[in-house]
Length: 119
Image (cartoon, rainbow, N blue to C red; front, side, top):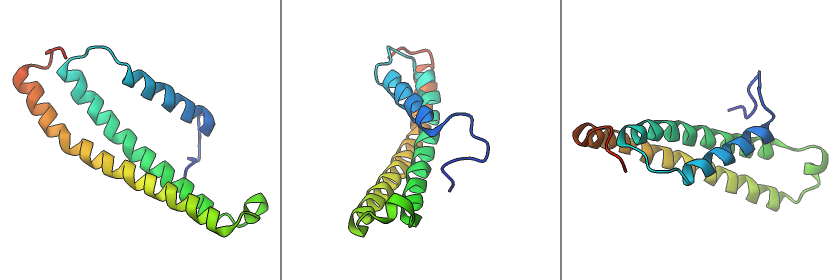
């Protein structure tokens, strides 16, 4: 999986900073209703899957890096970083799977309690 699409809109650092700001906004979100939570869960699942791919892509790029300043890095340290990024990518994938499993239950609760039920 390529970390940089063929036509990028934002530099990766800007996109990552935007992701951080959006996650912080979700963390401090005010009261909401059940219908909105169902929609948010769908976006979070997709986001987790993209983050999984991004981390896996970073691991692949570092694992293939055999040039420049990275070539001078001790292989044990590079291998450790690659392994950490791979594990983090897998963890985001597992998280997306778990969140995805919750979507039908969240939709059922919203349908039965009413989508406008405030939380």
